[in-house]
Amino acid sequence: MKSISKFFFKKGFPLFDWKNICNELFSSKDNLTINKPSKFAIKNMNKGLDIFRIIGKSDVGQAIIVQNQLVLGIECVEGTDNLIRRCEKYKKNDDRGILLKLTKHKQHNELDLPTIGIQTVSNIKKYNYEGLFIEKNECIIINKNQVIDFCNNNNLFLSTFNKNI
Figure 1 (cartoon, helix red, strand yellow):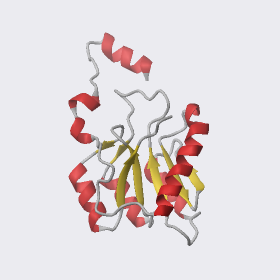
Figure 2 (cartoon, one colour):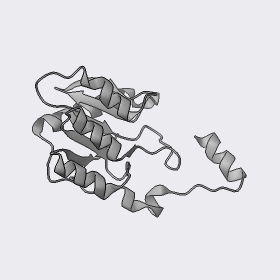
Figure 3 (cartoon, one colour):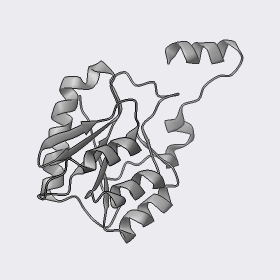
């Protein structure tokens, strides 16, 4: 990503800081929705963060699915939507599981930020997950009001966390 940003800069296309220019795309609220994460969801989030602390430097992906404090999948080249779909077949009957979306170590803040949108939350609903956690002030939410309304209307939570790694 650094090579790509240098290339654009040399060609006269400076990059901009999404967080400063488009801060309305991010969230600093703990909970964006009416529904709050259950105790199972919070335990799953903590497990996902524990795993990310171990694998995060490998630059694999920006999302993890956790259910029953077991990692069902880690995002690779397939992207978040395919991760959500792929992990559905591994789910058990206990808690519904969660998606955790976060920045990688040394994430390039101008070209490669974690992003969610209506497609992400539609898939969360379709494959019967409880909801999703996004990293506070680090994840772009495309059509934020539409995403929040969809979650509220479909009994999903959308909450943030601080990675602190």
